[in-house]
Structure formats: C-alpha cells, structure tokens
Length: 189
Image 1 (cartoon, rainbow, N blue to C red):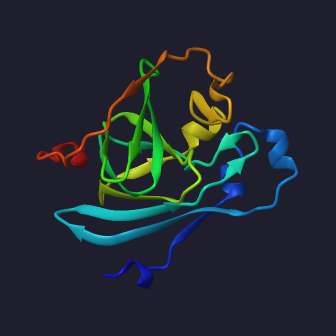
Image 2 (cartoon, rainbow, N blue to C red):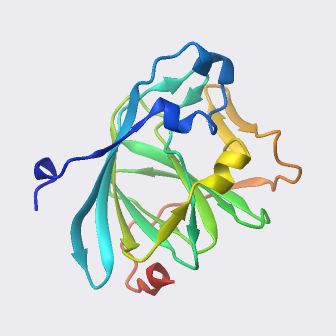
C-alpha cells in the first residue's frame, strides 16, 4: 500500500490549543495544519505501521510538536526517523521520570509502556517518522490536555518547565538506538 493512496489525518493548531506553551501567540493565530498522520499503512501480527510527517514550524516560542498522549494499558511503541531530525519527549504516568531522545534519520526510539510521549520538530527540515504500535492500543490525550501539555516544553530558549505540574522530575537525555529491537513484545501490552 502506497502512502499516497492513504488519506492522512491532519492535526490542526486548534487541536493542540490546550497543550501549547505560548498561549498569547495562539490567541492571534489561524487554525493552520501542523502535521499529517498516515495510519494503517501496513498491519501484521496485530501491529500497525503508520507514518507521521511534521513540517518545520514555530508555535510562537515553542517548536512544533505532536499533541502527545499516553497509551491506555501497558502498550509500548517504536519509532524510526525516516527523514529530518526530532526530539522525542517521554514522561512516566506517575511523573517519577522524564527524558528526551534526539534522533535523526535511521535512528530508532522505543517508547516504554506507561510513558506518555510527544515528538518535536526543532529543525528547519520536515520530520518524517514511522511507528509500530499494537492495533489494540488506544491513546489517552485528555490527561496531557488537563495539564496544559507535558511537564516540559521545548522552546527557542531551550527546555521550559510546565508550571501546571506540582512535581516535575529532572529531565535527562537518552541516546537513540541504531538498530531495530529484536524483541517487540513491549508493543503488545
């Protein structure tokens, strides 16, 4: 199945209004498309393969990002950067941990179970990523929206803590993987 034959889900600015950093900028902005999700390009062994395309943009002072979510249940996810470079921000549901991974073309990023994640395009090039996720996995966007986004925002001035969180773990950095994991059991919950 070719990506051109699949109609993308388009994520617009208004859909991210509760999770962006620069609220003043948002009030003056038009409802522009931010990124494109091509879901179900392939399905095999209960795993769905999707591609997301995130053109470069600034949301005021913040770099463009995906809306971000947790998985309902114990599902993980795997990403591969196909083009460009991005920052994958993860935070554990209980907020005992938060980390980011800077990844470029060819890199893999594993999202562990019980971690929320958002993907940030901090470059001037389009970020194109593939993901593998269980077809049974459902997303929880509401928990992130209620807090006004993740516990950190990535802005033109670097990382900024989200003041809506009472407890914010120290942000650490992890390296991406250069190879696809051999064991994908973490995808199945």
